[in-house]
Amino acid sequence: MTEQEFEQSGWTLEALLPAHEGKEFERILAGLEQQMAQFEAGRERLSPDMAADEFLDLMRCYEEIYVTVARLGGYAQLWFSEDTQSQAALGFLGRMEELSTDVQNRTLFFSLWWKGLDEEPAQRLIAASGDYAYYLESLRRFKPYTLSEAEERIINLKDVNGPNALVKLYEMITNRFTFTLDVDGEAKEMTRDELSTYVRDPSPEVRAAAYQELFRVYGDQGAVLAQIYNHRVRDWASENVALRGIGSPVAVRNLANDIPDPVVETLLSVCRSNMPLFHRYFRLKARWLGMDRLRRYDIYAPVRAAEKTYPFPEAAGLVLHSLNRFAPELAGHARRVFGDGHVDSEIRPGKRGGAFCAGVLPDVTPWVLVNYVGKTDDVFALAHEMGHAVHALMAGHHSAFTFHSALPLAETASVFSEMLLTDRLLSEEKDTAVRRDLLARMLDIAYATVARQAYFVLFELEAHRRAVEGATADDLCALYMDNLREQFADAVELSDDFCWEWIAIPHIYATPFYCYAYSFGQLLVLALYQQYREEGEPFVPRFLRVLAHGGSQSPESIISEAGFDIAAPEFWQGGFDVLQSMLDELENL
Ligand SMILES: [Zn+2]
Image (cartoon, rainbow, N blue to C red):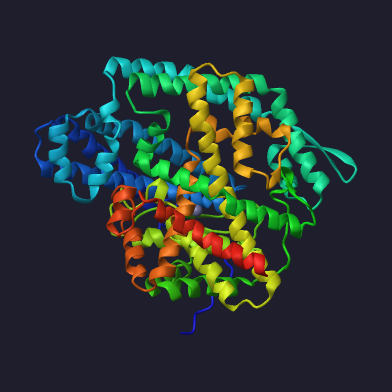
């Protein structure tokens, strides 16, 4: 098959909105107002014994409103991303945000009614609601743990100035931090983001200095930040565990993710028992750097052996070809994204940095943004975002409420697409330096997303338990050092300054236990990839089924329906087996 070549270009947003002003645009706004009026009129028909088809009519109307708002909001977001300096785009974005808030407020009555409905009528309506079912179930997931209306109102009220205020204070304090680092003999003041780039500096002194400065600044406010954490964590337990009766602090997050508690326990324990693999990798990395032993400061030291670049048409071809080798259906979807002009790959002043994919609506070709320079990482970013796009198109037959996959499965196609690209590149690469870079890249990512994040959550599990028993800042620091000592064993030299690392992780304040979603998503894909290696062709349709479900069922039932068992340790171990084989090759290079 000869591939059509795709050049670096901007994108077109026509499929979302023909214009952002003028007659046609006004017509869309008027249509939305009409839909809203129709939906609001349905309010008085809401009752536990309403007919199923009447309920479905209302759901369809709700979906139409959602679709229109997603069109307008999606357009605003994408326009702003392509040109963050445009006053017109900024103005339109603000206007659409207001519109979306207004729509949310005016439609809120429906979800409130739905969440309050008794179990029996709710089940009757869910049974008749087809593709909307999982969405409707999800809205009610916290129902068994909901308190009386008066209690809920008090909690809402007290949250504003309680836990929400604590998180805001944490952000206010830490966002003001400035850091000073000697760069080329000159003291430079910088933000945390800027400082973070120096932990990847080629110089060992600079890497150490960057970390020391980070923890000096956080450590100065250590007592206050630790106290904020303590209050946050105790409030989490007193509300969710004591009042609502959810089994444990982490179970609150599991419920939100719709993942059974034992699956998360299995995931974490498999991560824990596979740390020796990373210890081997760190020893290897120390050899590459000419050190006896890696210091914790050197984990992200650059070890690139080759400097290879790829012109954009070649990168697009590589991504398409690696998808095509796995399943032509996926390559077909990716070709559609390129062909429809939905990829903004150019480098332009004012364009948003980084990369993302916006799958705005079912069966509307998603939009992909990358800032393509031609480095290996850029090719992988393209493969990653194209994976998201392909996932959205595979699930295009679902409703607007159920085609987006839930958080734990959201990275399935994107990371899988990166794996396919890795294999595609390795299969032809003879240059050992390039091979080394490709394999080391995978192990670096696996450490940062699988192991490190799992250890954050292991710390949280212990910290939440100890905080309610009255742990002090010093206790929590000691606990964190124990966590690091287990994580690195004797493969990495630890220094005491890392005892403050935990107070520098915003996620554990804002969204407790969130971090395991990273480990889950990444390791899930590695485990699926291992299944692919073992099974070959028969694996393909099973994997495509996982993608085609989108977010129309719980993560566990989507995966088990395709014949995989995420409750089994062996399944997760498969993910580490992939890494093991990569590490074996690295050691032999
Ligand atoms: Zn992603």
